[in-house]
Image (cartoon, rainbow, N blue to C red; front, top):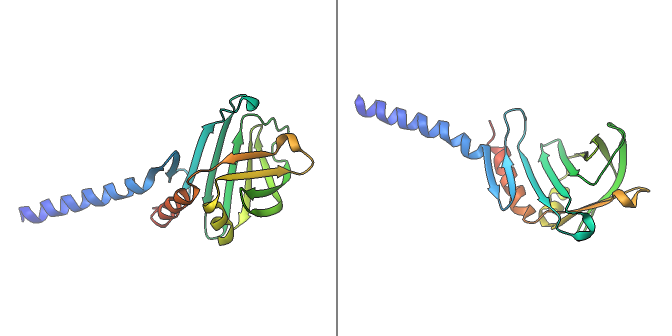
Length: 167
């Protein structure tokens, strides 16, 4: 009986620890996590651009998805959007492929935009092969941006694993 209780306690401990592994992990400088306030897992990466022309600006990208949608949030401290809720249009591409033209991006605050797109595996495939993600805003070259997304394929694979194992 004591062995049974010990085995049961070990099993409960192992099972309760297992979701914690899926809750947050690192892939390079990407963080893959399922936060308690979110329904889905997120892959996020933040960095400073050391380019002298860019004044050492902060960049953050967050990617999440479900079987219905892909959500990309981009934060750049060089932006100064005026109207929260405003819808902007931008061509989206990677270092070697166009993903979509005139995609809608919503202004979330003065430094943040969010794109919500119908789930399409080809978008995920293009992102996974990319080293850079670009937004070319319509009629606004000053706010167009290129974000570095190294190891995106590994990060998206980890995001998929997190999504498949979230609780």
